[in-house]
Image 1 (cartoon, rainbow, N blue to C red):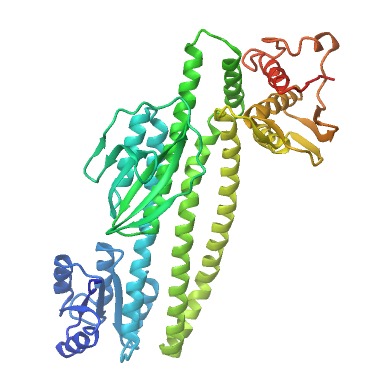
Image 2: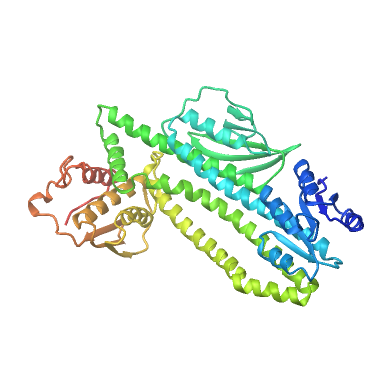
Length: 525
C-alpha cells in the first residue's frame, strides 16, 4: 500500500488552519503551523512532501518561508495562498521556480495546486536521479577502462549491480540457465568469487536473448555475456520489483564488462605475441591486425563505445521524463485556463511568451532526437572497429564481400575523414566461403596502402563483380603508382618502402597468403 503523503499547512488564522486541515486531510496527512518559525521547526523534524503557506503572516511572510524551504529541500512541493491585492506575492510566485500560487477565495484550485506540486516534485526527483546515474556511469566506465584483470572486472560488475536498491543478489554463471555453474555472487554487502576462474584466451559473442522470468517472490533478469566453446556466461540478477532505470543500469554494466573483457584479451594477446619467440604465420596475421588497428583506431572503439552506450541508455529515460513534464505542463495550463482569474491567465501567458518555455521544451525534444541519431552513428563506427579486433572462431562461413569492404572502408575513412573520395561499383555477387575477419583484413591492408600512398588525399575506386565461378574485387587509387622494379617484391615478407613506424612489411604478404589459402588470386597492376 502506498504511504500517505504529508502536507505542512502554515497560516496564522486558526479557523483557516482548521479549514485547510479538513479539506486536505481527505487525501493527505496534514501538519499545521501558525508561524514561519514554527513551520521550519516542524519541517526539520518531519518528512514533508509539500508546504502550503498563506502569504500574509506576522514576521516572516509566506513567500520568504517557501524560499527558505526550497533552499533546504529543492524537491519539496510549495504552494502560496494569496489575495488578489498581494502584488508582491503574485510577482514572487511567478518568478520563484517551483512555487505554485492559489488566490483567495479558492474552491478546487488548492487541491489541484497541491496535486500538481507533488507531481512536479516526483518529476524533478526522477530527473535528478537520471543525472546522478549518468555521472555515476561515467565514473564506472573509467573504472572498467582502468582495470585489466579479468577476475577484478567480474567483481566490479557484480558489485555495481548488487548496489541497486531493488536487487536482492546477482551472480555470474556458466552453462544452462536451468542448472548453471556459479562462479561468483554478490549482495549489497559483499562480493564472493566461489571458484578460481580460468579465463580462456578468446571469447565469442552470443546470439542468445536476454531473459526475464518471474520466480515466486522475485524477478530474475539474465543477460548473456559471451560464449566460450559451447558454454554461455550469464550475468543473472534477482530483483524485488522491476524498474526500468535499474534494468537499464544492469544492461550498461553488462556492456561495460563485455567491452572490458574484450579489451583485456586484446591487450593480453598483443603481450603474448610480443613475448613469444615463435613467429609462425598465424601470429604474424594477428600482429599485423593489431598494427593496423593501432594505426587507424588507437583505442577509438572502446573510448567512444563506452560513453555512447550509456548515453543511448539514458536518452530513453530522459525522453520519458520529458514526456511526463510536457503532460504536467499541459494539465497545469488546462487547469489555469479553466480555474484561474483572467488577470492571472494574462500574466502567465505573458510570462510564457517572454521566457519561450514551450519553444525551449520543443527544442529539447529535437536535440534529444539529433543526439540519438549521432550516438547510433558513433556506436556503428565502434562496432565496425570491433569486427577486426576480435579473433575469428576458426570456422568458415558464408561471407558477404561487400559487407567486409564496407567495414574496412569505415575504419580507413575514419582516419582520413576529409581527404579521401571513394567511388564504388558493386554488382550482386554470391557470398564466399571464408572467415569474415580474414577477408576484411585483406581489404583493410590494401586500403591502408592506397590511402598512405596518396598521403590521405585522393580517390579510391572499388569495383565488385562476378564472372563464371569467381568473385572479383578491384581496388584502384590515384596515388603515384608502384615502380616496375619493385612490383615483383610487393608480396615478400618484411619488404616495405614505408618510413619506420608506418608499416611492418607484412600486410601484403599476409593478404596474399590468406587469398591463396582460399584458392584465390591477388595481383598488382
